[in-house]
Length: 255
Image (cartoon, rainbow, N blue to C red; front, side, top):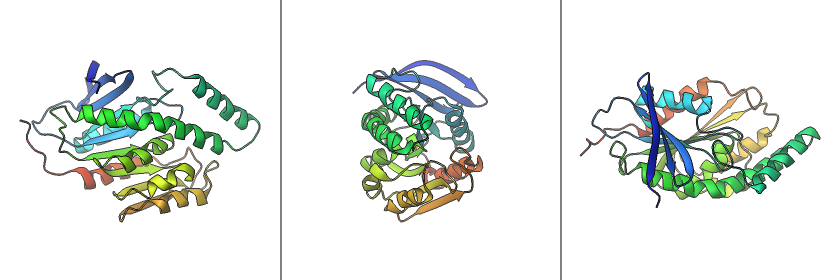
C-alpha cells in the first residue's frame, strides 16, 4: 500500500487544506484548522465529469461539512482529470462525446460507458485512500465514513459504496441507471438522491429507476424542477444535514 504524502497546506477561515498524493494519485484533504483532540468523521467526495478535486463545487461542499459539522473531507482527482494525464482511451471517449453533442445525438451512451471505465480505475484508488486516511490520528479506523458524489461522482460512488462496508451513508444523483443498477441493489446504507425533473440529458424515468434500485430502508428522493445544471444550491445544505444526522456521534479522544 502506498503511503499518504502531504505536499502542501494552507489555512483560511477555520479550514486546513492539505494537498496529498497516494502513489501517483493526487488528492486534497480539508479539515478543521483547530485540532480538538478528538477524532471526527470523514466524508469522501468525488467530482463531476470534466472537473477536478478543487472545483468550486467540491471546495464549497467541503467548507459546509468542515465548518458546519467539524468533519474531514477528501477528494481525489479522477483518472484523466485534474492533475492526472489523459490516456489514449480518455481522449477517444471525450472526442466521441463532443462528436455526439455536435451532431445532436444523445451523449448519455458515451458518458455511461466512459464513466464505467473511469469507475473501474477510481474505486480501488478511493479504497486505498480510505485505508491511508484512516491511519491519520485525527480520523482513525473506527470513525464513520460518508460518500458524496453527483454525476460522474455517482458513477464512481455507487460501485465504491457497494464494495466498501466502511461507508455508512451516501449522497448520490444525476446519473443514468444502466450499469449502476446491479451495484445499487447491493447498497443498504441510508441514501439521499438528487435529480432534476426537467433534465435534458437524463430522462426522468431513468433517474427514478436508479433511485428505486437502492436496497436501502432509508432513502430519500429530492426531485427539483430545472435542467441538468440547475440543481439548487440548497441541496448542498440538505446533504450536510443528512451527513450530520448519520455520521455525527461522540468521538473518541485521540490517543
